[in-house]
Image (cartoon, rainbow, N blue to C red; front, side, top):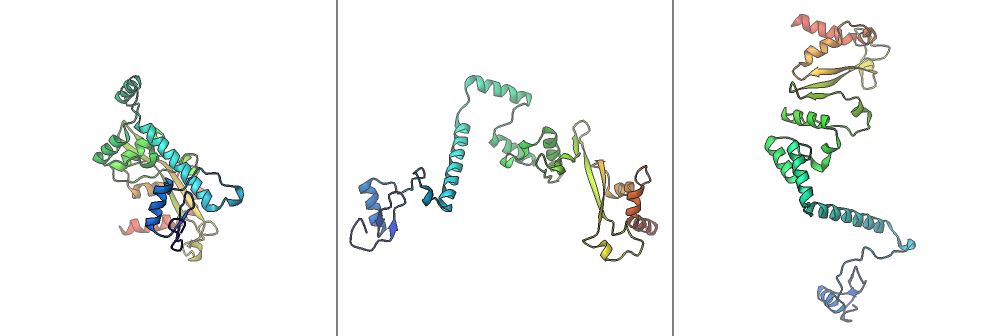
Length: 244
């Protein structure tokens, strides 16, 4: 022990690397040397001594700096002119509410909170869609912007009618060889079977699944090949209808 010189060393100070044997010697070292006992995260480390743990430490240090910068920006009170402009924007609905107030209002209304700001990353049209879906008891998750599933999503909330029009995609297992006959084999309809999709761009939220799936089999120009591939399902629905 470099403090009492009486016992074997057990601990090493993260800051100055001084070795001690007990808590008493550790506290004595901090008092005598005026050492904080905390590792100096800004200390220069040579390339030869740079390890994975050092890289992780540097990353956590930068994350902590960014967090403190963000917290300080939120803590700063706005100037008089800035506060007036912000208040005018809020009255027009052009500025967001403070995070705490927005979360409180969302909780009272049963709407999704903007956790992590994920909803703010989307357009106002998609934000309205998510909020209306939540009011209907639907948890709607959006793909990030730029992804193909997000770009083809035509689901929209109509503020004038107060209704949502959904993009519905029906996926059928068409089997091998173009849909198969009435017998079909289990292999033709198993996990490796070919899939056939039919998209309905605007489906009213009040429509039933049965009414919409019937439209898939309606004879319309250009739908012949698709209806042929899913004819097995059409036959099954016809049989169910005759029994009903």
